[in-house]
Length: 357
Image (cartoon, rainbow, N blue to C red; front, side, top):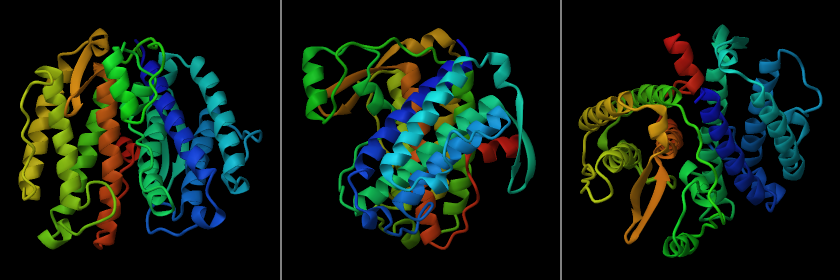
């Protein structure tokens, strides 16, 4: 099982989530699309164009030359034209990935960053693009909440697998899923051939980003940590607790099943204690990952996603979900930190690659 299969799964999620966003954006007025926000690129239109521009930029870097058949982000302003450009670019990217070999993923791609010249393996750049998308879609969802969609769709990886399952749901479960607002596919798709190596690397990045966010939060006082925000779980402390609790909750599901009792950390947990708990959770998770082989990632695991509703997923799917979940909520925390006057350093996957090169 090659890393490119895991990367293809992440890009499938990238495109699925992109289409959910573009469908809503296509119904908005120019005033709604251009409403200014103190987060990300600054408006919903700018955020969507930034996502497209980043995908186009890296696609050109992978080819090593200009690709004029794809418009530049500055030349596509309307959602319809942007959506069309997104999809044409994604189709070309998928064709490119079809021809990529495992050895190609180790080939270093040269580019200029804000901090100088770099040469990064193609596989890392591919993962960076999907991770970058999760970060900015978290911002786009919050913008949508404020321009007419108080309950925008969830864009988690597992929401995609509920609509495009690789497991068979029984009739009762399918009905519960429909009641939750999803439309599960009629027949399960083949499971993704995930590779444990890529998943371990993704978690290593997540741990690096978590530690840096905790360092920033440690410099805040309790009123700042508990300042309410209309995004995510509602405050810096609550969001950081939510990230850690999700990691522990999934670990319990992987190793003990949905019957295992799970105690969330108290809402008064200090950042120091949260950091210690997060590291302990990460250590047990890493030890668990070290004992896995690729084929085990297809194992079916159960999780009680709400009272009375137990769903099943593939183990590898839940791991990709957990990585993306952390990225999504850290994007919210970074916005909250900026509003608290904290200077936030770059925390992209690519920044981790540069820091650990």
